[in-house]
Image (cartoon, rainbow, N blue to C red; front, side):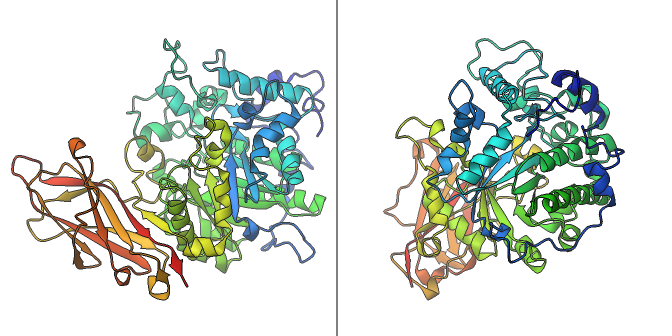
Length: 583
């Protein structure tokens, strides 16, 4: 890779940043420059299909069974002082004994990049005072590697290929982690003592301070800091051409400078593209931007003689996509994507994977499901196996693990890692996924607090917590366990069991339960819960004939409630355990 300064004689990197990037002008990628990638992008007609021919021997999108997403943490995981070998070991090294087939690394964050970009500052570089030793460590690691002629992205691409992994680079289409920095006062004097230093990703980019007119709203308005308006206000507005230029040029720089296998447009970091009231009508603007990026990818693929796959991580349904300005059917029909990653991963047991999996299949585009760290694995391998089986049974071809790098040994004391990356081998064993014991969970809703402010408008809703009101009219409350197992065609090695946890229950309150319309009784031998904390557990042994493939409904009625209490209790958790199956 050429030195990042050699195209601008006598101009330092920092001075270049100050004078060009905030105008949205990219070195060698200016939309007005004849012969540039952007000029070619505007002139080159799009092709409907880009499927690699039979002579292509590499991995194809449908081959990515297990994908691990990563961010800038390898710069913290590697030993100090920074070295090319240390960075590769910190990023690719932990994957060598796993079943991961593709490594996806993020190139940008709210406060900067973690590579030698000519267009965007390194994390921490623009900040007058850093509030975290990790920020300084990350910034200096990138600076030292770049000054020695080693670009972190190039090192990880090469290291991944040497380990037999494909490498995708990911562009966050709108990252507003700076909002967390605002909430903890990063622009104010440090809180003393600093018992929880700020993360490297929470700083506000200089372009947001210099160009508030590029934002969707007023980031200094007195919105409640757990509100949608507060989060949306600090996001870039794709209706504004200079902001589109900034993002397009960063994409084009990445596509032209690195030996990547694919490029992902991540619309869930963060899902604010236009003002909410005009996102649908602006969808053509985002479509045209994706066309421009697709042209650059095609141009670079033609130069090197092998494909660059283009992916997008999007909400779970066509409707949710349209609500934020993404016209996914048009993208599929035009062949703008080679694969799609579905959802933010917060509701892996209820997200309707099938809609986008079927839409993609009709257009020859495989769909991967995103699982967010800690949600599917709350019950270990059994709950991960359950949501994986459900996704694969819906037509999903692979799983992208979001933030599962936290399962690497670097984040745990010796012997305390509850689930290391060896779990990835389970997912490439079809018999284990299909017949192994499973635990299907009730998804918790992302529609509360700060998660609601960030993802509530774009994420599939969960089912808990749920109020169970006094049933004076005979109407009960239902939750659904959507399972992919067909117990009628298998021999379960035991009985399925349903379990729920309910809080705020008085001694003489009376509940009634039904499974798929038939009354069921709690197992009197099961654990009753931590009653001292008003946490009450109910467990039910089910006949295998009572459990069907697809949705199973548990109905709960509160028939009697003490008059001195609120007229409801709350369902806070639930699961359905499926034993091992024999064919």
